Length: 358
Image (cartoon, rainbow, N blue to C red; front, top):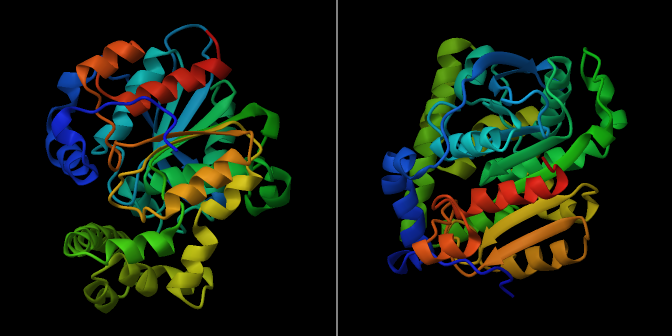
């Protein structure tokens, strides 16, 4: 089933070990192990679907004309300032002569200060990517536009590729003109995307370690809504914040009613990315580890099946890698001729370059 040759350091040949190391050790010294320098970013506020304001940072490619523009965001919590794994993408994309746009998705970072709009896990965020691409084009950022993300952000990026197929159907949701054609959108690349929320959350809650992870993420989600409560008084029920002690509880208290879903399970069914994979009509790269401890392992054969039946999707499935880890050992770096240990981002950039040659 595994179709790529990737090797981590010996001590990280375990999904949980890789995930913990990446979160608590690699996050501290990532700049030491990253070959490319940080671009000079400018701040910008975009309009997403439904005119929701979205905070982003932008960097133009260094040469006269770029290879295109990469638009990316992160996972379930954080912001563009502290999401170091996303900043690695920004560095690599800029070094390969792409324009870069990184943004705080709905209810996150500075976007939460601009709007009380809550998350929808891709249902609306996919359109947000396309809206950002259209406005970046107006600012002189060249097509093709590529969408990228990891973890839950990977699910959002998959929805963005899906939204690129149907611009005409939802263009009227925005007050501004989306002067962008589907042909100007290249596709997307995702690392460890969430594709089946119901199965994965049940799996996470089936173990003691998983329950601890769930509560830790929930604490970060509570910080998000507290920030919205402070910035937009009256839009968030303080008592609901106290009750939202799990991921499921957060979506139950804050999300499903606003989106019109009767249950959290129905919301997860509607927002999960696995059912839309057969419909993706743009080139799409999916990098996934079979030992990802955050997601139900029964998803792997279903993901493999869905991707193998859509010629637009390339699935790079490895035995190891954990959740948003994929740190490679020295031999693996030499084999792939990589400049550093960030195997998944290096594969992503090589894949983008196939479609956008220098």
